[in-house]
Each structure stands twice: as C-alpha cells, then as structure tokens.
Image 1 (cartoon, rainbow, N blue to C red):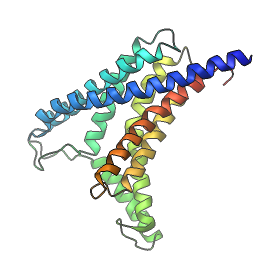
Image 2 (image 1 turned 60 degrees about the vertical axis):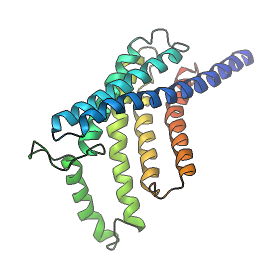
Image 3 (image 1 turned 90 degrees about the vertical axis):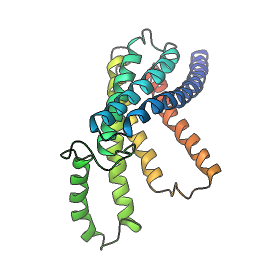
Amino acid sequence: MDSENSDFKTLGNSFVIGWVVKTIVAIIAGTAMGGAVNQLLVCSPSVARELLGAILLGMIMGAFVGVAQSTQLSKIVRDPKLWVIASIAGWTIAIFLFEINWPVFRCLTSSNSPSYRPGAFIHTIHNLIDFIARPMLKGQTIYGGIYKLVTTFYAACLIGVTLGLPQGAGQWWVLRKELPRSSKLIWIYTLNWAAVFFILFNIDLINLNPILLVGLIIIVLIETAAAPAFMLIWLHKPDG
C-alpha cells in the first residue's frame, strides 16, 4: 500500500511539473503566433474581421495547448486523442466570447456595423448592479473602496464563466468516461480564471514595476496551468 502511494505521488509530481511547463510554453507560443494573425485582422473597421481574428487566435492557442497537454495526459488517460479537439473548441469559444464582451484588442472606435455594441450584455448587467449597489455602498466611486471590490468581483466572475466554462466543459466531455468526477474541471477553470482576473483588476498594472510585472505574469501562468493539473491528479487517485 505504501509502495502504491509512493508511486502515485511520484507520478503526480512529474505529471504536474510536466503539465505546467508544457502548458506555459504552449500558451506563449500560441499567443505569439495567434496574436500575429489576430493583429492582421483586429485593426480593421470591420467587426466581422475583428471577431474572425479572435476565432483564429482561439483556434491557434487551443491547438498549441491541446497538443502539449495531450502528450502529458497520456500518462493517466488511455485515449487522450480528442483532447486537442476539445482544447481548440474550448479556447476558440472562450476567446470569442471574451472579445465580444471585453474587446481588448479593438483598435478603432468606429465600425462598419453601427448596430454592433461590444459588451452590451455585460454593460446591461453592470448598470443593474451599479443601480442596486451604489446606494447600499453609500455612493463610493468605482475608483476605490468597497464599491471597487464589488464591481471587480462581479466582473471577474463573469470573465471566469466566459473563459472557464467552455474550457472545462470540453475537457469534461473528453474525460467523462475515464474520470467520472471530471465535471469538477468546469468549476475549477471557472474559479481559476475568476481569481486571476480579480487580482489583476485590483493591481495598477500600468504603473507596476517592469520586474514585478514580469513576475506577476509568470505567477499567473503557473497558477493557471497548475490548478487543473492538481485536479486531474486528484481525479485520477483511486481513492480520491
């Protein structure tokens, strides 16, 4: 029994380290290549081209991450072939939804489609929260105090759902037969992204020391990759 636990711990450690390293390298490579393709399309007055850029960015990042993770996943799962497809689908849907609601890549304020309002759904919810929360919080502004924590928490949760739900759902679909409890990956990804953005929203990134900024990015990448890796090991544990 002790031998089995020791073997499992060794497998778990090597799996997590390999998963984190491969995922980070894949994210960096996918972002570089996908970002280059994305930039050819986003600086355009055409909303359709901007959203196409987001789709291509998601597909490229999903492909890089999916291939990298599938090589590691083969250590605990018999058939990880569909992981790449699920990863591409998850990242593509996630980044597409993110671009619609938080158009961070938008270069122009005008659009060929005047009726297109990026983030209209998000703004509608925000206005409702603002209407309810502001009187309760005694009129504190969005720039400080409790009100900022409330609004950033709300925004982080929405982003967590936007990015985490598609990724977690795709991975659950691939693993559902081999790891019956894999549905937990859905909320792990959702909570993970929500926590990351809540922290980022409450840090002055623009005025942050460059060294600290690089360190923060590294920490975020490690945390983002490590959380699902630990969950996969926990799901794989026979008596977990």
